[in-house]
Amino acid sequence: MEEKIVIVTDASGKKLYETTNETNEFYQNRLDQLNRWITDLDKYEELELKYKTGQDFNTLRNLYSLDALVTITSIDLSIITTELYLNKSRMKQIFYMKQVYLLIYEAYETYNSKKQFLRNLIQKSNPLLIEEFNAIGILERVFIKDFKLTTLIKNVRHKVGGHIDREFRTWYDTVITLDPHHTANMAIAFMQAFSPIQHLTMKLAGVEHEKFIKHNNDSTNSFNELLGKIEDLTAKVNEKRPDGQKLDFDMNVFRNMLK
Image 1 (cartoon, rainbow, N blue to C red):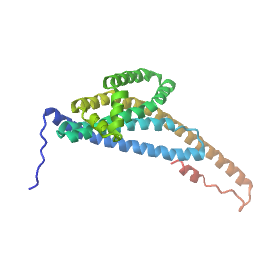
Image 2 (spheres, one colour):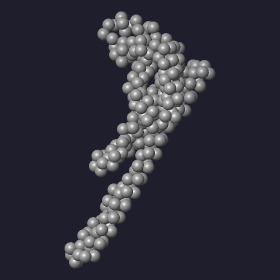
Image 3 (tube, helix red, strand yellow):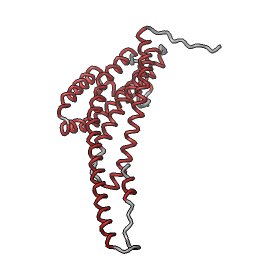
Image 4 (cartoon, rainbow, N blue to C red):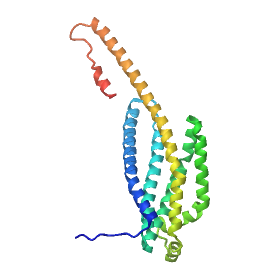
């Protein structure tokens, strides 16, 4: 008979554990979907380099990248927070807490590097979303202030999260100050503050994707019109040419390239 491992917890721990398991499938599907979209962009960019249609793919790529950032951070923090809550071993708690500080700092730094892109895109193409963007900025500033992102979180990330400090006492003095309850609350607060970024990028990506589809359809129609004119011209030329000297262009070869 196999030994059964039982983790003793309360109702909150059970709910957190079940919620994490339920959302894992959503996050995995979202990452798979984003990977397919970005793979498609790679293919379209290759065609763009070849045919110079004038289509810009950087905007969609940046939006998908932001979406992926929030998805990766959310799934990692949800799993780590669950384990942090369930584990009572101090060394295991320290391990998970270090990961929370590292994840939050790196996720914020990555988002911060793309924030100007997001602001410019909204102002240029969808100013109705500026209020939503500003609301995210308020949540961001509250989190930074409440949890001391630029001082405490940054310090823990540098001393024990991203590196093992060269001075053992510095490392030790840092990890003994880490508190599981505070760290779990910080992870939850971060997800609450930054999950709206995903909602915003999904809206913007939808708009940009529609533009892309329209541009692609317009380009396809123009190309088909051009091929039709070439076929008509070829037919007129061949009417005047003797057998053996007629032009023989297979336009279906070009049309198949658009499929």
